[in-house]
Length: 389
Ligand SMILES: Nc1ncnc2c1ncn2[C@@H]1O[C@H](COP(=O)(O)OP(=O)(O)OP(=O)(O)O)[C@@H](O)[C@H]1O
Ligand SMILES: [Mg+2]
Image 1: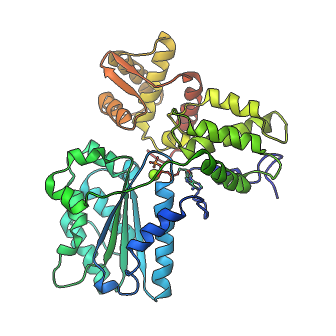
Image 2: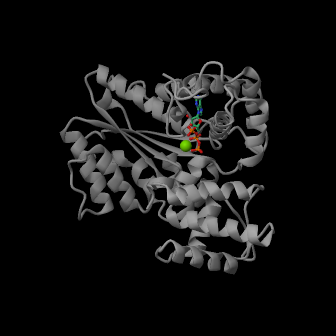
Image 3: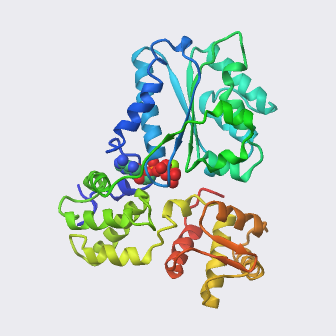
């Protein structure tokens, strides 16, 4: 049963959905599998493997690593072993070392209480739990570059890459730690000891070519759209747009384009998405800000972004001043009965997320145009059921 004249199942375009098929990442999956190939045949002799996956936004790093983790779980299971994956996205769930280790403990050993333990004790508990229960673990820390940029607490890299040294009497049952980042810029904030345990050779994921993007979109469309709703002209156009400099291969943007153009076609009562609809939507949405990024923002950042946009729209200027943004934030916090928060911190975070540009305290702006389009998306986020409170 189809959802509408256009969509078969639009939720398949959601950034949260991880398709089982990832065309053009087969090689990367194989490479990671190769690193872990002995981990399930001789787990106790297999040393802790540390891996870094690096590459620009939206090119399948997270999806690929998560898919690999599923395959590894199957490999372990077929040898009658259990490996648990602890995935933490540091941009979403970050915080300090303590909070991160607590999440790891929750994911791997939910029955262990974490209260009252120090960060190091939590790791010891975790290792002991795995050892005593004959279980194994794979730790995935996504967006590590974000964490290292906002905190000085980079000790987390040091700790996790030396888990095998915690208890010399027992083998370490954490078999792998995979770090994912957009670039290696964060190296500059690490000290020598951290850099050396991290290993200097990351796995770099290449961006997709036009042809590869087109294959990926065909595969994604086959799940989300009715068979005749998307023609090859539309796929070609979106593939071209996606490889443009502004989008830089971000598949998330391509999926957003498909979703919004599909919605538009639906509201206009057509049964196919047209090139015009794609172009119209492309002209309206913001290549540097995807819906997923907005959905992931904490409340204070959403309001700060909203305040900035309102200021820019009211002034009809490209940049706003910090004090103007502050005033708008005060208006908004009163209107929505929010607690006060630090606007500068929030702007700094938006800058690290590359959503805004801060040239000086008098020149704060957003890359590109279409503020009018961004505002309703934020409004929706403010009104909707939000998870980041
Ligand atoms: N090869 C592929 N096949 C199908 N879908 C893909 C493929 N590569 C990426 N995608 C889709 O594109 C979106 C972005 O992918 P993903 O989240 O893995 O990117 P990322 O490299 O981790 O980006 P970021 O650095 O922003 O976190 C996801 O919705 C994902 O399902
Ligand atoms: Mg990712």
